[in-house]
Length: 578
Image 1 (cartoon, rainbow, N blue to C red):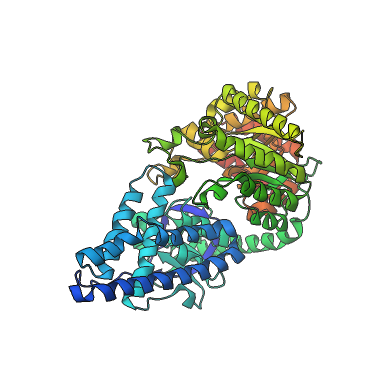
Image 2 (tube, rainbow, N blue to C red):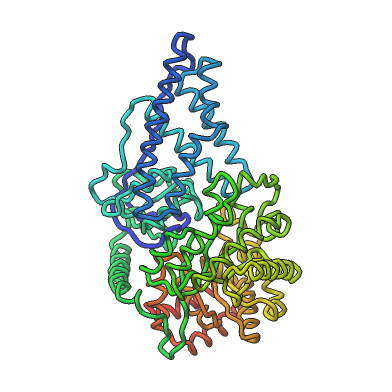
């Protein structure tokens, strides 16, 4: 049988070679839809018992996930547990049993599908992902109700590459890295919960194979290339040799990383580049330090807000920000003010439904309208600044007027704290996230007023190229190596240099090894990424010559197509890094 290649989305880097195990999630057999009046009470009790067992299961899984992957990742499972307490979800299942004589299984299936379809039809990526979460909860309820014992992923005891149409978050966190060498999915995007968990576990993964998934057969020997979104079925000997060599190089490199994470990222000709971590919770700061982080380049405060049923108080926020400040000591911590809207929502804010949420009411736009929300957060950050090296970063700034309005509020709060004799760092810096093309184009003007820039490439690419990065139909167009994106980054870096201001990057591009020489050449002072990528990026920087990187950047910026940029960077990487 000849070699076949199918492509999807490479969502977790790495290479895996092995046999495929096709996994089919539990699907309840058809059961009777209605029960008799005499059975209603017992059926309601049966549902309640199933719910209690699931809550117990999830609590155990959450505790395990917090220990292994951190609070932020465990929050995905907490979100599932919250469905069972949601007054709009569980009571509706009960209602079908009590008022319409539905069987528990039929009631669960109807309500779950109704809610899943509502979520799947929403504009927000974050809310669309909740469809997968609610189906996961429904699957768990049905397993308990039917008493069936589906195949458990924890039972896998041999090395395989797991292939599933749709692997749920609660299934993903149970995978044993010792046996599950890779993950393949028919559906799924780069920011789905399954993708996030696969990256955290360090398991190579390719999702979004679509119809290509049907080419896979149980027991097929395959190569999974998570870096390039490629699955090779029944590879020829020549292909196997090529990939075995790549795996050997990767293993040697990973071994070397353990020694490198404690070292500074300094080029061969002496240029220092700070390598920092992106975090979402205080607990992740310890993990970041253990991975060699030289600071926190992005503290996403929205996770605190999303974990609460109501707005977190100033004291709650202060406690979290102070904890991170104390853990990091004198290392810099850039705290981004609330970045909600678009793909992230808060039920208690009652944000309006929008046709284009990414272009609408979000981030600093909400803060400037709901000023009390912004003031409370800025007060909490300022108070916490007395305990460490904190900086404030404003998201989604698109004009100087917006920055000036926030700066005025910031200075007013400083004056209030002084009057009350409350300690804070009077020299705390206020910067902006460059994620809107207008901000990049106005970088020379912004550089005269802000203290620093941090380039958020995820949204910058999306807005520059008019590409929804979660839409599988156009995902191939989303590329941070597009020449237009690179020119915007250069504009920001040049403006910062001319004004002697600090400039870093905290988007996905910062953790892309192929981009590292280019970003060093463009003059970025800091690269901030997922903690697990820090060692690899430090290793690359220590092999580079900054002057050579500057020449590379000049050559790359002359190239007119994304493909030519990638080819040039790959050529440089092979000659100087690999």
